[in-house]
Structure formats: C-alpha cells, structure tokens
Image 1 (cartoon, rainbow, N blue to C red):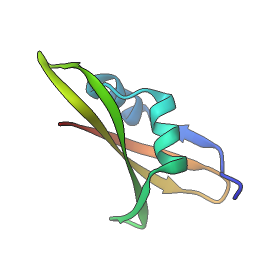
Image 2 (cartoon, helix red, strand yellow):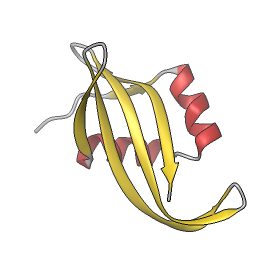
Image 3 (tube, helix red, strand yellow):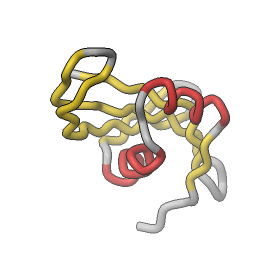
Length: 86
C-alpha cells in the first residue's frame, strides 16, 4: 500500500511538543497503528509505544499516541496529536 505524504498542522506540532510526541512516532502511528473513524470525516490512528520513562514527574511503562488526520486528495494532514501515559 502506498501512503500519501504526511503534513503537520501548526496546531499538531504545538501539541506534539507539549505532550511529548515525536514526528517519527506520529508517522509510525499512522503507518502501523489502529485506524479508527473520527468526527468530521477524519481518521484517527492509535498506537502504544514502550516508554519506561518519566513524564510529569511519574514513571510510565506505556505511551499511547492518538493522531487525528484529515485525508486530502494527495496528502494526509495531521490535525492534532494526543498522548496518554500509563
């Protein structure tokens, strides 16, 4: 399957920085994560990553990324990224 190029909105980049998600993790989430329908004809992609590190002063084993994506004719646009630590 050929994937469309991935672009990041300004909002998505801000949220990634604030929530501890890298561009590589988001791309991997889109390529290999679980695809889930989202509102407004968008798709979300979810993937768990081994983390075993500190976030906000607490240690977590898993970091889960949820990327909300709008699919255009020739590109995928990451609208926002949410992270969950557990």
